[in-house]
Length: 301
Image (cartoon, rainbow, N blue to C red):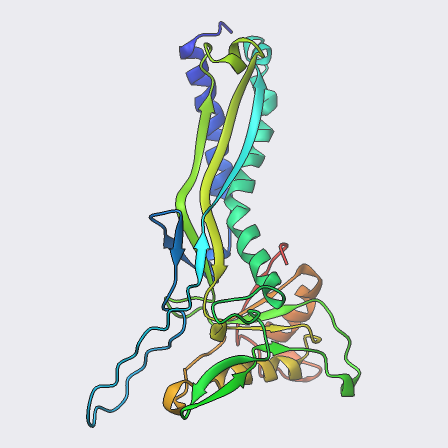
């Protein structure tokens, strides 16, 4: 192939098509558990993460819900991936050997949000959220009946039952516009080409550069919508976790109406989770938890 701007445009179009096809074929799951927020600057502050606004009977003066400014800020980060193609390979019509690389770039780009979001979920036992506590913690403070009380969204093995710590699993309420996690997007993933034959890398090093980059980040949303467990995934522990979430109350002692809709597990717990949620009969008895939550299995936990 003669190297000129027209031939390089055709090669780029081919690489871009392979990338886009693989990107479109992927099935990321992050939007099931995270709300996607557009960012307009280098960072975003989420000052409203302290409140669950709810209605009350209007008897006398209006009671204002002042959104607590917890100064929870998510700073955008830059991400990139790059493939370099030898100019001689293009000249010798060997560009087809690079197709698998661009296909994998497309697939990995589409799954990158999953890597960030589910990785963040797994780190919730040791990373803090808007109230300064770990996202999964036994000492979140809430005001109930004008009194501060400690609320837990964490389950650990029961030593009295001689339970051992196992792989973490998570219950989430994803039924609302506000979700437990935040995917903040400043600039979406873009396919970037550097193949101008007058550029140093192309002219002197004989390398054509194709990249994908983005500017974004992830962060914790409302801990009330999530529950993390390191106890064994048993019917009893699952029931206790659901009961804890559904029993949460806000100001004036009113139920927050939280109902877990998703169970997230690593591959090592997939079989256990499927028996818990999918089997209509469990141990010869009717399984009352069948269909009680959607199952998500993530490799990024």
